[in-house]
Image (cartoon, rainbow, N blue to C red; front, side, top):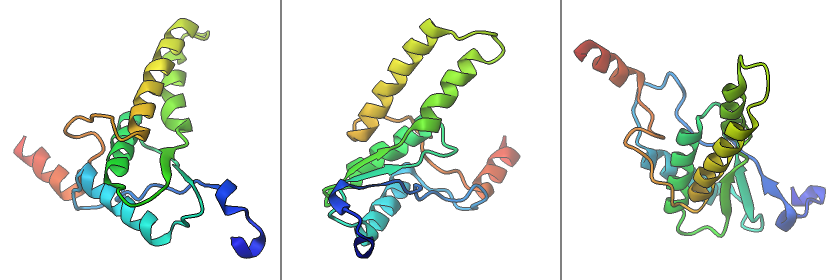
Amino acid sequence: MIDHGVYMAGSTLKPNIVNPGRDCPISYTVEQIAEANVFVVEQSFPVAMKGCNYLSGGQTLHQAAARLSAINRANSKGPWNLSFSWSQALQLPLLNLCKGKGELQLKEMSKLYIDELKIASAAAKGEYEWSNRDGAHVGKESEKKRKLAG
């Protein structure tokens, strides 16, 4: 990027978060997913770049928040601001709130948006407290066993 004249200190990278594929048979904890992301960032992310805003694509707000919070807790070496661009994780719940209602639900949308921003802020600081399963990946094999047992 430097060879192409990119001013690294003024740039922000928007990569995908390292996640197991949907059909991955192996289960991973949110902490293991975080460790994988921190490893990739430490191995390949330019130190001159101060920000990394992961794409939240396909994750719910709580999945994205759990993973980002765990990533920020695991990031003990890097000088980077690690966050999400949040667009899909924040916008979809707002759009779903209005689905089928014929008009914008501004009061409800405002409250939901403030609540979502509090979650996003806590996650960006590594302070979001996730529940047991938020952010974890349940492998297809574990899912099959759970269905057979239940």
